[in-house]
Length: 357
Image (tube, rainbow, N blue to C red; front, side, top):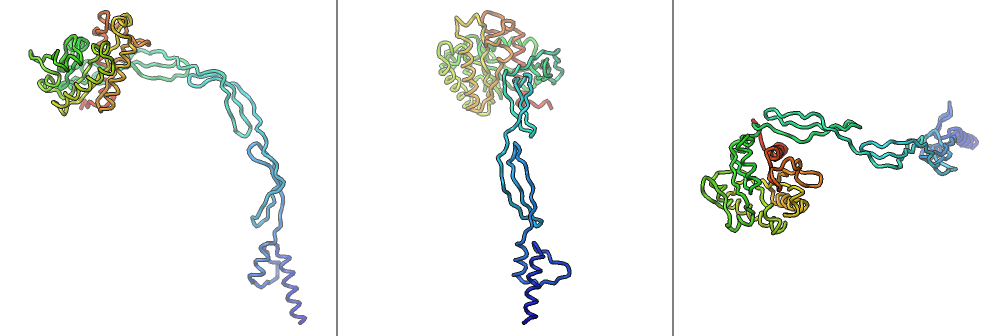
């Protein structure tokens, strides 16, 4: 009986000395589930005070060597302490005040708008062969650059237009004369006639001439064997028929073209702007702008090409640049026709429609 009591006392003393499961040196404790579980729950904690900051609250951390821990005495997170510095406006970002905390948090209070780029045009790079020329525009403040006003040699892409035809009114006739002079589009076919409108061609009041014979547009294209057609019509329709009716008639014309020429590739061109002084006797340039947006929407809806030739032909107010006009209306001189051709070639290039190889 005395021997049994001695063994029990020995086990209890060992359990007290263990602390988180550690066995006292030189002792052998029977490894039963009861003694192991009891030893694992005796923790010895140390404390550490973690101060509050502007990114986290403060607290006292109690940690045991076994990995167990808990927190007490929590205090709220502190407010950020910002230092302020001034930011000057740049081309793309407004000026203002920058508030920065030591923790890395920051915010900007804008007090002025961006300056915007101040571009100056460098010396134009001329086109060579099938390589386009361009103007380099450089910002005097930040050095940002972009290229614009792309130009092409007369020889570039010439073969692309061998199976193309242009349908239009007297505006297109000016392009016909220009092509006969400098041949920027080679052997392209022109089916144009002064004064024609989409309406007059649809009802058969006017016709297009090819090799001395008159045809409806769809039949003229079949006769000349064109595979792609560039259409610029509507400037003679919109002032009296309105934009919506003009677009409706243009859609019908293209439908008829495709009915007779199902593989025809369709290019709808924006109508040229007119001189500011001509707006009173025709219609405002903003109405022609609406016409062109309607042509663009039609092309997008039906999957046709839309070629905006107007970008480099107009002033900021949308009217035709006088230096490109040969009369008091909208007909382009050779310099204006060159801009027109360059716009078409640039579209063909950007859309990867021409392979010089």
